[in-house]
Image 1 (cartoon, rainbow, N blue to C red):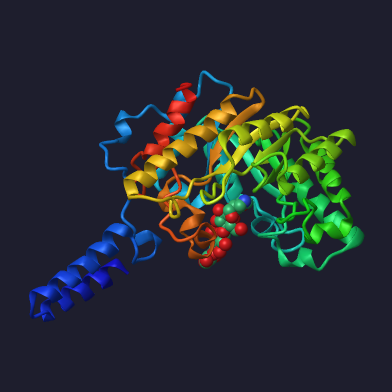
Image 2: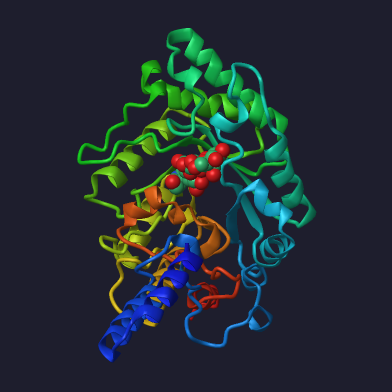
Length: 384
Ligand code: G3I
C-alpha cells in the first residue's frame, strides 16, 4: 500500500510543471506519511515517542514488578512464537501470558466433541519454559463460538457446555493458574442485565454451572468472570450489574475467585483513576481478586501531536496501573497484545470502535522499541 502511494506521488511529481503543484503534492505526501491519514494500519509509521528509548536501557517490566505480588502480562497468539524477537520480548518483560484466541471455543471445539488444543499447548509450554503464569481465556463466550453450539438448547446445550469446560480445564489442569470462565455475559446499555447469549437459554444459572464445572475440573485454578466496560464504578449500569452478578454468585457459594476488568480504554469517555480505584475496592470487598485483563490505550482520538498523544497515553496508563497498585487484592495487569504491530485494534473493523486511528495502543512500538507508555507502567510500579 505504502509503496503504491509513494510510486503514485513520485509519478505525479514528475508530471508537475510549476512550483505550486510541487508544493501541493509534497504537503499531501507529508500529511499522509506523518499524520498517518493515508495507509492501512501496518503502513503507519511506528510511534517511538520522539525520544531515545531503546530496549537495552529499559528495566524489564517483570523485573520491576518482581518485588510486588502483581503480575504483568501480555496476550499472545501462537503464531507470534515463531518470531524470535517476539519470543525474546515477551519472555523478558512479562511474567503472565494469556492466550489471545487459541483457547476460545471456536478454535478448540469446532465440531462437537472434536478438540484441537495444540495451539493452546504451544502457549502453555512457552509460559512454563519462561516462568510465566498462564491465564486461560475463555471458556463460555457468545463470540468466537462454534456455530453448532448456537443451535443447541436445554440439556444438549448444558452437556455441551460442561463437556467443553471439563475437557479444556482438565487438559491444562495444574498448568493454568487463572481461567476466564465466563466472558462478557453482561449487556451493554443502561439495564446492567445479562446479554442475550446462546447460553442464556439455560437461564442465569448457566454462569453458576460453568464455574462449578471448572472448579471440579481443576480445584486449584482461580476462576474469573471477565468483562469490558465495567471499570467506571458506582452509578454505571454495567459496573453495577457486574457487582450484582458477583455478589449473587458469592452468596450462592459458587466458586468464583476473581473479576477481570478488561480495561480496553476509550479515551473519549473514560473514568477517573479515583473512580477506577473505588470500583476495584468494591469488588475486592466481596473477597474477589481483581485483574486488569486486557489493557490497551488507543491514542487515535486523543488530541494533539503524536508526541502529545503518546505522553497522554503514558499518563492514562500510569494512573490505571497505580489504581491497581493501591488495592491489595488487585493482582495483575495484562496488556492486550505485545506491540503496536500486534493489536486487535489494527483490524479496521475493531479499530473503528475507538474512532479513527492509528491507535498505537500498546507499550512497544511496531519495531518493538519501548514507548512512553512503558515508562508510565514502570513509574507506577515504583510508586512514582
Ligand atoms: O483465524 C482467522 C483467519 O483464518 C482469517 O484468515 C482471518 C481473516 O480476517 O481472520 C482470522 O480470525 C480472526 C481472529 O481474531 C484470529 O486472528 C478474526 O477475524 C478476528 O475477528 C479475531 O479477532 C479477535 C477478537 O477477539 C474476536 O472477537 C481478536 O484477535 C482478539 O484480540 C479479540 O479479543 C477480545 C477478547 O477475547 C475478549 N475481550 C475483547 C477482546 C477484543 O475484542
